[in-house]
Image (cartoon, rainbow, N blue to C red; front, side, top):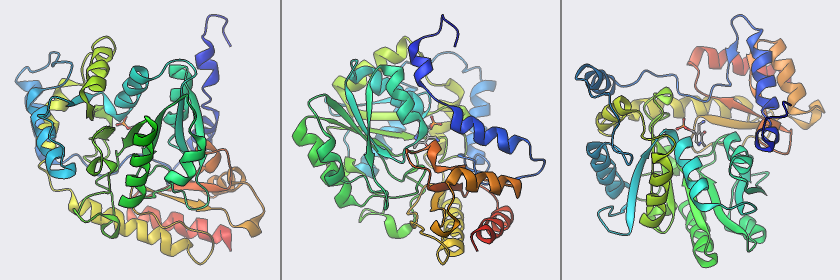
Length: 380
Ligand code: PMP
């Protein structure tokens, strides 16, 4: 490591992900079931609104908090979805540079060195990297074998340094959707203990029908509590991950500090993407969601007689156990899969354990079928 570099960068390990990519990069025409972004085109009205913004020379900074028209759309959307009245003085919303931008700003606004954040294991890889990035300590909540980050599992991990419980449902990498009751219990626990609950709901739209709550939406603790931070994104929902767009809503005291930090870092979210997103919230994505659900079903059906499959309730992944009779690690399994032309990611990229692999359903049905045949063949 170069002597000028910070300890921070030294503490962030990207080796697992890099290894998975390097292995895959050698293949000429792989069946790639490792991709964490949807494989559909951005809806036409969203594309057109974005192009129009550029052509009409709306290319300057927006307000740090976001394009007022988009903010209005988000306020209406959240009122309808989680029942929050964002016109209230004590609640606010901020448009961010991706969901990642919202996560980083929230951590920077809340954490001092040594403060603790509880996240589920398995986790989305950015969560653990946010520890060194903000000098905070990440405490992992072991959620095997069902991958549910419940209040019972979180409670023993709370200390007087815990400031954040970060929950992600529908989850990356497991596809697990927590129930309304589980999320409400988590919200109550955080409220009782004076801890900020952050709910990363980037996959909210990708929730399969039997996992929706009684309001017909993805279960969210925000329907139970508004003293929390709700983070959502546009990238996965509308197939525009590269546009870097998300939003955070929650207590004004927190949103205003996140906005202050945004002003001196990201400045604002990309302006043309914000213009496009105004059209996005009116687009019907149900046909895409149905298609993803059918793919998720294909995965469960393929593996259920061969190994432990935790049936995903949403997101774009399944997290599948390498059968015990194979007596190998997930890394070994994934290396063998790559030799057979299929790319899936070993569990140790997302976890302390190396027993499962993540399979993405963001691949067309033909490729997915081919990939499933190869992977299930390996398990016979
Ligand atoms: N949270 C989760 C759970 C994710 O899976 C991802 C993207 N893979 C993100 C946040 C970051 O999303 P964005 O591209 O909006 O920054």
